[in-house]
Length: 55
Image 1: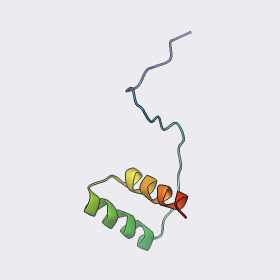
Image 2: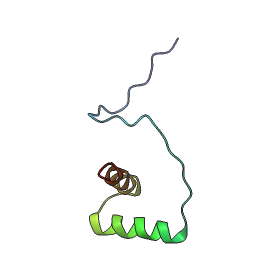
Image 3: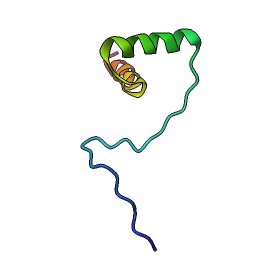
């Protein structure tokens, strides 16, 4: 049996995947946010999810 491949070490592993569909308006909002902040789409989406915790 082959040994499990080791990826980059991380303090915050992200083993869960999410696939979603966005409207053109929602994607533009995400892309505008990412452009302003210099973040990637996944980082921007995670920021939005974290905002939900505050509600």
